[in-house]
Image (cartoon, rainbow, N blue to C red; front, side):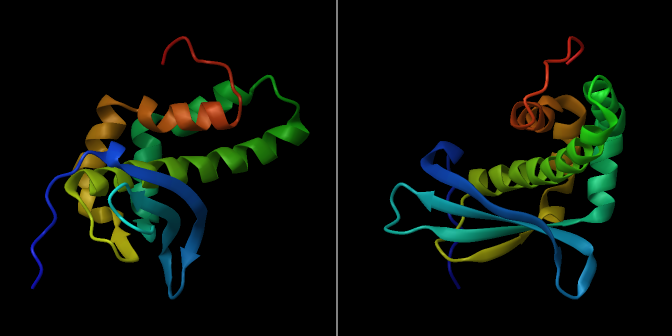
Length: 153
């Protein structure tokens, strides 16, 4: 049995988003985002998949007020572009929540092998982020979609 890795600073890792969210095979209630992760001391990188339950995504959306935020951000956009931007914002939201969960996993330290992490391991921590620091999720979306900064956020 291997010993758990020591707590690590996430800055020791280089993380690149690979793909997702995509449905998990044989699990329609889960979505998966995949990241390439390389730690400075490792010779090579690994793939880390984050699985998140749709119910947790919906809970995070409600906690942040995501639908209202998107509507507010996109109200000046023409109807044709709005539907596509709303779809893309939804994808980015899931990616951003998965990124938060990955950062929590990296903080605890991970071993150097491809792995799947169930985001449910971090349910309480993710709830706290959604409540206390929603900008960790929303800012990534705003920057990716090149949206104006909200005066209330």
